[in-house]
Image (cartoon, rainbow, N blue to C red; front, side):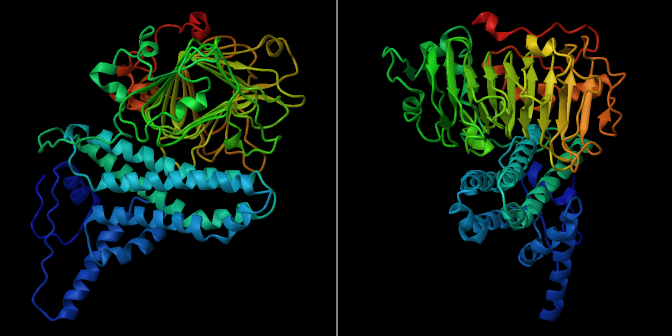
Length: 578
């Protein structure tokens, strides 16, 4: 694509496209040699055009133009304008953390101190994601053949930045008083700017797809950061998940009987180097480890491997009823990018009537769980954000027991409803997508959806596949085996004042079993009928861009979402090998 030397209208497609793909932006605004006032007028006009063009695809156009116009006084380069938006959002969140009277009051109020701690954690994560995106926009040393992968990274991180801010608000909604309303107002601007940034990147991605850009342009090398390049992709790590290889190569062995280097998991994680770029393996021998474990964002490229989910168990009992915010109830929380777990059970033993009680919380990009169990009641598995893949795992619970706002695929897993507390229903998935173009969603593929015997036998327990947690919730169930315990309606509203059933996106495709009959399903606009070709857009290959980071682990991996031909077999239980 040629670019004229004289540019009078700056557009996202013409300038940013060339800037990202070719690695050079040529903008030569020629002003006449008139007086300074005329030159200034011309510059202001060009700046306004640049801002209007780059703000065109955004959801919050007024916010976009008002915040970017001052930055445009010094530049009309779309890269600089996008970065200015990211920087403004970062500064706004940082200011909220440091100077907000609402947060300061919340820190000292017993009713809201837990929510304050959650906000501290997740808002810093949002800042990190915006900073990561800021730096990536500035880096033109990319492989032109993987430009869509480059842009997908940006969308994942910007989506996560928005989710993190929403998590802060959710934590305050669990408290009493008006703090939630105040925080909503406080974060409104930064959330609008974050979503606007996503919209800009998404628009570019669409235009590139339409143009079908190929590798004829200059190809430069990029050295990925530790948070982008999973250590297991390196040649010497590709056989890690086969047999007992990971156990033999472990950096640390945890054993309660003293046969390892340490006796607790928390002792082991203290030995992980910060921002680790090589695979750090912790082998956890058989035993019940009653610990609350947190692998923070600096603990990257970590693998936890156990002796099987029946033998290696990490157990906690925190719950909302015991005074913890949902996020802090997790028995295990993982935030370091490029995380793998194999052969481990994550449990929360809080009773069914104790409210949210998370067994596993995952906020780690490119995380993989293979042959694991997650057991609890309400909110068992919190797939918070980023890219996640679960293969041959068992997940059990009662209410919303698979929930979050990640880009996640469950493949060949066993999903088990448990007996809820009196008066409660069983609901399997609850997804948290909050704006229409977001890439997040929960995909259940070739899984078995069943229940424990007392649920299967009960005529009074009502069970549903899911409910839309946030406005644009996306839940997709493909080629799975569904037992008869599911209510024929299939899906339930979130709550009367926020049903979210008009704007969500819900799909059942190619499923089998006595609970898969869709003839009596709810008739909502959000329930979609799709083709086989559309169903395959929810394969790990497409939905997660998984070919770049999943197959190299050596775990079983089906690239397609559906063959639309054969009846799927019930997913194997990982316990069979453990």
